[in-house]
Image (tube, rainbow, N blue to C red):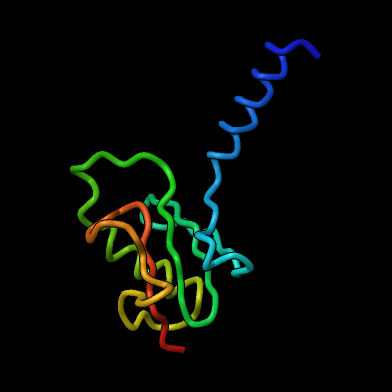
Length: 109
């Protein structure tokens, strides 16, 4: 296989791998739930009383205000539990407060 073809294949695989949400390492082995509502798509990973919610797709800044509440709702739908607050310790999110792309929560089941 020529080098140019091999490089093109690797780039294509890398781009396709970025099209799907993957859990953070602490959520490896978590149950995955794909949820759509209110025109948004979320992937939720649930493990050991915690949830990681990843919003999928592009959203302009002006449309992001309702997303944090929708992320809480997505975690509750996926887990069947109530969100008790943001995840702490090992489970906490490294994202900035107010991030609308990823959030982690403690669950009260």
